[in-house]
Image 1: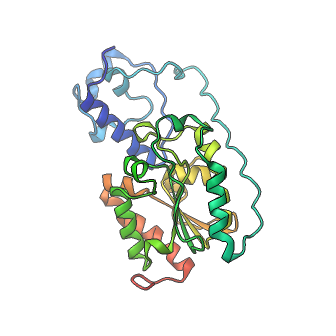
Image 2: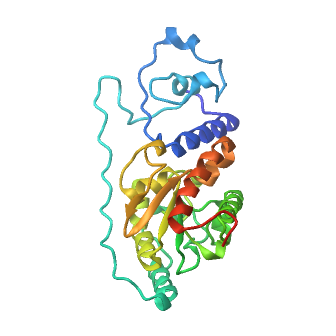
Image 3: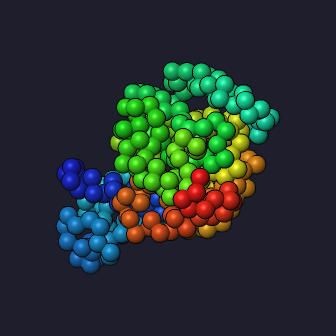
Length: 285
């Protein structure tokens, strides 16, 4: 089959990222009846309401996407990989020692080569913010801007996150920000389970040091690896989860909100849950 042209590939990747942020992460290709091909949108169109990239549709076959290990219609769907058990919650670190404890974690990470992500990174992106923060944000992984600067959320999505923090009545330097993985995945793809499971224990240790009252998981990947379960965001949002002694709220990733600004209202509703737990009022620090 012919290779995808760059514009089609970019559009397809954007659509897959859109569905990923909604928590739809498993897609399976099934045999396509050629006589039904006329029922789908014309050649080259991506993004129509009737052509969502979902199981059973012919989009993949028409555009030349192949999957060597995808189950056929009558084959059983392979079981999902189990999540790695999180490490036990570490003893509490005194407030005055938390910054030093975080530095020790960073030193232990070193010039990490524990997973394949190190091959394409420029810098390890450890974290940013207050070691004694009451509020901690967890994203998926560094992007190009973060990889260049060595800090999380400094690109367009980071600017939106800064606005979200300000709307909560806080400053960026008053919160703590980290990611599931600390090296940029190629082309900003979703981290593979092996990569996330290799890196996430360091995140758990960071959380145990900071001891935030509230954690906000930004997007499906952060929610998946923090809670150890794979569900659509709709099933995780709108309520408070217990996590390592903190209260965890799930919302959309800022990068997703840039692609679909209509969901900003829903994200604000999630942040208001976090604000209630922290006793904050909008515009008041």
